Amino acid sequence: MAVRVICIKKDEGNYENPYLAIDYLEWVNERINVNGITDRTKIYDWIKNEDGEAYIIDKYGNKMCLVAEVSPQGNKYVRTTKDELADCLLLLPDCA
Image (cartoon, rainbow, N blue to C red; front, side, top):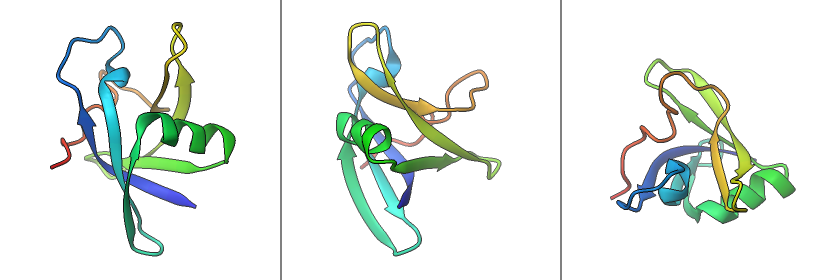
């Protein structure tokens, strides 16, 4: 199953690693038209351990898959595989 992340909910604090500010991600499975909300560590586990696929679509229509990463302190997070000046995941709108 693949899901497209459509928005993120971030903590407004200062983080050395901005991905750790993401509390949860809202997504849609466009194939079966189902929406959901998953916290950062659960989507990490789903991608890393269950062969899940999550992606975003940038403003140019490019699909960028999310990959599971672990910070040096052991914190789980996700990020996109293609980065320009800024990770497009962090540029998604804030979830309402």
